[in-house]
Amino acid sequence: MFVGGSLSYDRFWDRLPPETADPAAMAAYAALQDWGESAEGFIRTLKDSLDREMRFLEHAVGHARDSYVRRDKDGRPIVTRTAAVPIPASAMDLEKPFLTACRSAVSSPRLRTPSTGRSGRGTSGSPRD
Image (cartoon, rainbow, N blue to C red):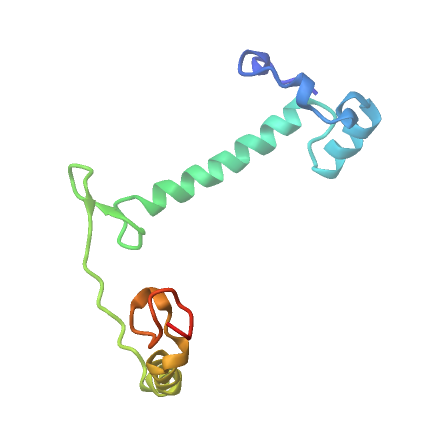
C-alpha cells in the first residue's frame, strides 16, 4: 500500500517487517481492518478516526457547559476550584491499625539504623562499639 507524499516524511522502508513485502499478507491485513483493496480505504479509516478525535477535543475544550475545560470569550480557560472530597470515616478506621503498627515499628530499637545515630550502637554499626 502506498500513500502519496509519505516518502517525504521519513526513511521507513528498512524498518518495516518482512510481511509488508508480501502482497497477500498486506491484502489480508487490509481486509481484516476493513480498508478495502486500496490506499483510499486506509485513508478513509484514518480520516474518520482523526475526525472523531477532533470532535471530541473540540467538545472537551469548548464553550459548552458540559465541556471538560471551558473557555471565556477570549479563548482563555476558565478554571473552577473543585471541592475537596472528605475522607470517609470507614477509611480512617481502616487506617488506624496500620498507623499504630508503623509507629510501634519505628520506635523499636531493633529497626533503627546506625546512620541515624539513634540505634544504641557505636558509630561503626557493630554491636560491640
